[in-house]
Length: 150
Image (cartoon, rainbow, N blue to C red; front, side, top):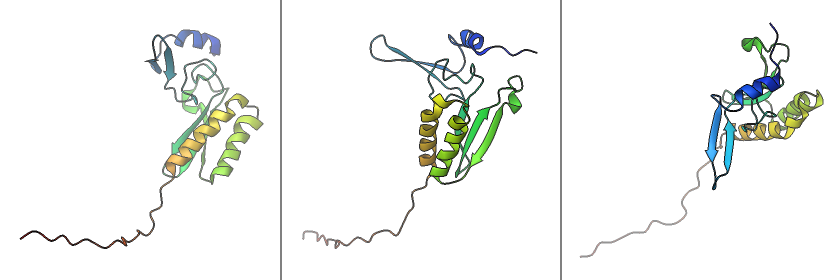
């Protein structure tokens, strides 16, 4: 079975699909967003579409302390179960950023998505951090004694 080219898929799904979110702004301005899984920008365009592009990048939270980096395999387009190559990362942020840069840019996979991938990684990493609760400070102000009237 031959795969359908990306521009043909985009022409089919660009007007109406289940992931499309239409927002109306000021006056007659319209903004279209997309809820696709493989869309880093969440914008409705061919360049960032996870449905029409054979090479996509996904960054998601994986559990309590990990980040999942998934890239699509170009030769498995007909098999959705084995379409993504997933790798979980549980390192410090600088190492994860280097791994994302290596996977997305240095391998010439999708160099145009480097900025969006690092921004998504930063947001997800920040959301997974737990604020540390230290020793609570004592109230050094004296309590006021309020006496009632007689």
